[in-house]
Image 1: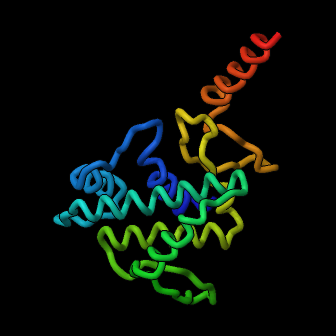
Image 2: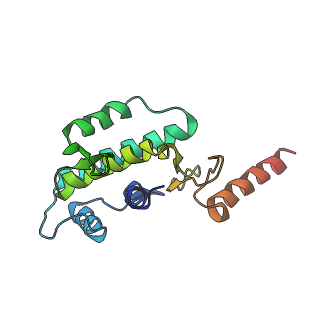
Length: 176
């Protein structure tokens, strides 16, 4: 995982989990963006900005869920392609001869474009499919699977993994 891309991407993906919405209002989203250093002071958000953030985040989370089980929701593909077509993104060549996908604006639209740019770079690195959602339906925390065989299922073995194993154990005992 590329640290800068992965950190911001996971932070954005985890603005919702375990039934908690961290960016429910324009004020919440504005605060979150400022905390992550991606929104210039004095920028005001509206309900549409929050709606766009939710749609982008939820479509990305759905694709991540589909990556893990091999079943991407076909409705998410047009949603993400629509974002890619309308957000301020541009292909840029670097002095070293590399190619990058970058946001051409700042502010909230620039941040949403930067999120898609991060996804693009993670895909180029072969790491996009390592992003997963915890299999615990009460959690669904997004994480980067660093395991060698890409088999990690839970955000943390000590919590969600242990709970899942205990449920399976109790279920087997109750069946006997």
